[in-house]
Length: 125
Image (cartoon, one colour):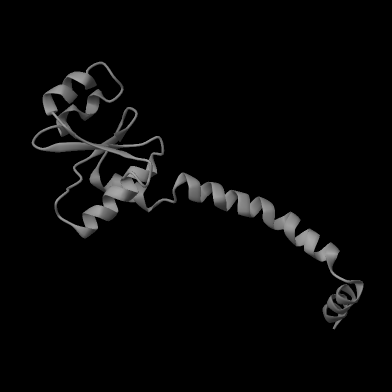
């Protein structure tokens, strides 16, 4: 979790239930029974990815639910969320797409005229 800039805390249920009162996460109150922990991050997808991958490796942790703001998430919702690309992956894909066009244009402009002539000749045939 640390490597993904996430936090993971084992919780005291009574304290968490008191802390959740009158917040946008109050609907998660029912999840805090038995031994529980909270995984959180600024990136919504990162803790889901790490925890879902970890539960595949071991049976020591079981995901029971979660929440984003005022929306409760089931285990299936969290698994689906974990399959999405992370915020950094989305950013890198967008940058790659934005850079692809100008990069190809610059390569074409820099090509020697003879190479361009050969490309045009193959297009005509």
